[in-house]
Length: 256
Image (cartoon, rainbow, N blue to C red; front, top):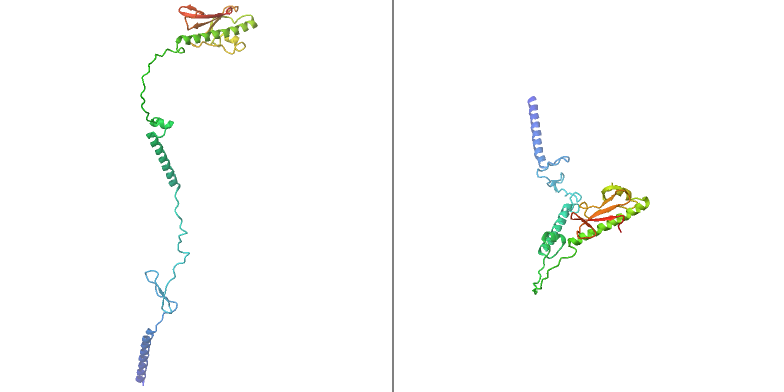
């Protein structure tokens, strides 16, 4: 009895195993993936994906237009300030080059271009002229040393007359002339003559035109008379007195 039961159990187990194997074989034909499991992505990047249910490939949508850069959003390159400065510099150099070339060719003439290239020369026609007689130029009167000396001598005479007028005014107020026992120069502002006459009787005392080579002298030993002296360049002037080849001109209180 026990052996028959064991055989029946083995028969049942073998039948169950056959059913399991047949069920596995039949299930392999209708096997489906669960809904929560998706096939792995390929190594190539964006590949068409298959639907988990229908098995048809799905194509991913392209990026939206907002993600794609637009041509209007790209900034156009702008020229820098250095480019404009370079253009202006080249223009100035071109203009200066044209001016210098024209000045060098003599087409234009200006003060500063003449200093660089010399004055512009223009061809002059050759004119034949008949020889004219030459006349020897006579010396001009103004270049004569005698005339120049005479002008200086006239100035000396007028200056002494001006000093004499101031001394006469001083004498009218003080009944005497400024006393100086030795000859003093009128150019000496520290002399007794300058201190007594300036500025009441004269604004300033004149000096010889050829000072300090020559000078005006004044002397009054007692205050009752005076003597003004100067040297005349013209030795032939008879209004002076020759003393050791020097023509001395004198003015006194008695002179006209």
